Image (tube, rainbow, N blue to C red; front, side, top):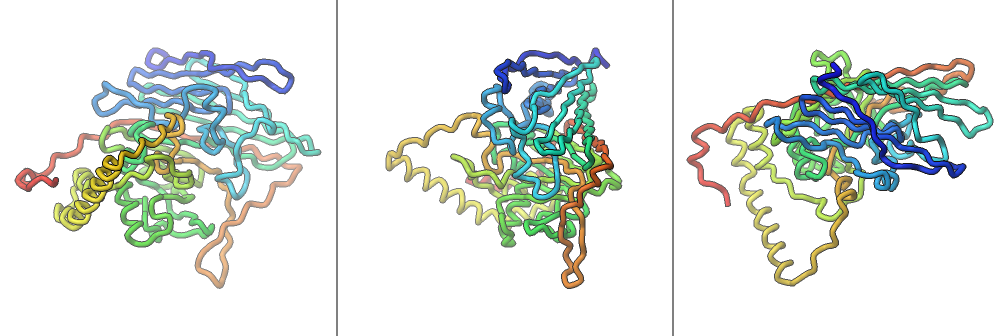
Length: 416
């Protein structure tokens, strides 16, 4: 195993603690003979690089929205960091960021061949003087499989859950929204939580992701059917861990052929197209459903007649965009200010937020409403510490090349 997987360590930078002493930040890098590269920091146990090969096996790309230096990392909003986050109750998506004044962010590291153990003692600022012990163990297999185990336990009781927040774009971290829309997504989820914290069946969602479907088509369908936040796919999904396929989430980028499956024993998963982020320059990229349907037809063999339904409308959109671009060039407007590469990776819809959550909800049924509302769990007794153990597995592979279109397609006139 060690010959097919190599683990190395190097300095990533230094931090200064409260006493003015320098603390070294280490970067651990795994490389497999099959082309996978994974980089993890002992700062926040953050994953900062994840390279996966494409269909040709000759080219790799960083599919994780991350940073290149320690300075960039420290400037990021904690909600964007692909780090290990402690989870407690509801709400969980915006108020659980790690703060330097709350805990020591540099984890202790121990390397066992190609296995990395990161441990942390999180001390509370309350009068109870309670401490939470956490361990993250990461290993990489030769078959491009990443396994992560989380363990936590609090001395004074309570359940402190831990998981990584992932930001993926299998087209490459700089591919933007245009690359994100080219993905086929499937979730093994029986239900989901909407914006009003109502628990709904998955088949009530306009973008029912239990069935593998093109992400761009999901957004287009949601927009046409008047779904709120139509340009996004978001929600907290209750995973069906007993599903036959077993995976929690499957993502395929049809262009490069990169495919990823996530397996986890967490009962909940937050999936979003980063719709909660502010839109940046050039972040709103027009999506043409005609092109999306063409791609889906190659993957799922849809009937070709669907293409003719939207082709006329999309030609009009193309012409309008071209005219607007010509008007701007004639007016001699100055080019918009360039956005830094770091900021460009975190625009709206530029990737996917995938965040396993460890059962933070209690379901209560109201007799007057057929919906179920989500309530935070009651705290555990102080005298009964509850250990938490969770697992996440990421499997990277290559999907088969797209099937060629039917021969009679070539006789059709090409669209302008």
